[in-house]
Image 1 (cartoon, rainbow, N blue to C red):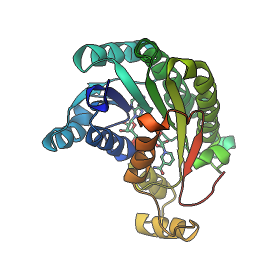
Image 2: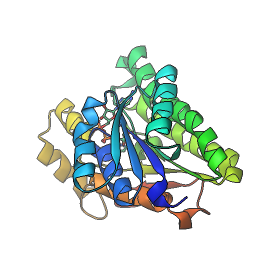
Image 3: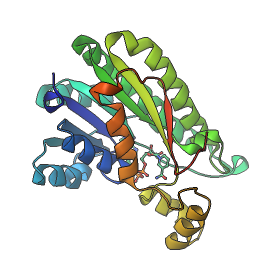
Length: 252
Ligand code: NAD
């Protein structure tokens, strides 16, 4: 099967990094299933892909819900084709210091990130095994190395790195590679919300962050999409179980 016939699922594709990932994969010739909490939320992502001549379809699913995941993977298989590429990108933040962190905030972040990556990967692996070819790209974070106010998020993002390495070991013999990207600060709604929570104007937040970044700028969603485009290539078939820090400098 060539890239033109392959189907990719991108979770959290309504906006930010997920929208850029979906657009890039469509440019690479894949049929893209843009998944977010509602199909409606993905309409803009899908619209711009189809306007540019690509193939994409919007799907609604909660990646933390087992039934919802099973349903969406089956819908993608029957409407777009068996998924050969999965980008686990959906995510949420519930930041607070440990002493104030509610159990709900811990569970929500663990569920969307860690359980979500697990459920989606488990649901697609059979299709990749049957095809003898697959690519899974997980989205971790520099927060995996520890970040104040993110006990839940950093634990989930570190967990994703362990999951990535184990799935690489288990799925390698079926022609499936599994890698992770650990972004640094990327300009999206997620980081806008962080600036708001810290009561810092976004421009100032970005400027301050850029001062600490070796390449002297913050990241754009397209920076992450470019890294994912490498991992899914045919020629990247010998690269598996890796964590690529895309952070404008060495953060690992
Ligand atoms: P964002 O908040 O702009 O987008 C996240 C998307 O995920 C949203 O569209 C949201 O609706 C969707 N989503 C949330 N819960 C979901 C669920 N249960 N099921 C399906 N979809 C769900 O965030 P972003 O900045 O684009 O981040 C994308 C990914 O990159 C996340 O995993 C995030 O943790 C990671 N990341 C972001 C940054 C950054 O600086 N922005 C840095 C490191 C890692």
